[in-house]
Length: 113
Image (cartoon, rainbow, N blue to C red; front, side, top):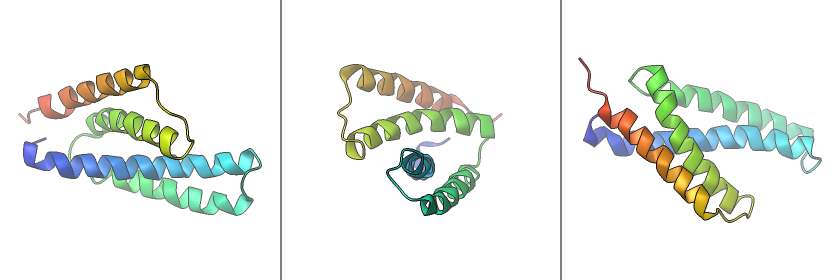
């Protein structure tokens, strides 16, 4: 991945993570009795969008998934704070930092042959 592609890829990963989180959160609401069964329809649509968004990255799928995982972790902690109302702890921040450094090594360290 080249430096000019980085902001686009990062934004795409964040939107992808939100689609996955919504797709998993809405069924949780239904299963815990906090939401209606009709929430399963937008949940399924969100998961379809999530899968489609992962296909928009031009590199090998395994590398995309590995890099996406770190962005997902960071987005999930944002979700924890904003949606669930739980403040992340210092070790959450350290874990996200380690994951993002690892993702950076994977994403920026790869050079096509």
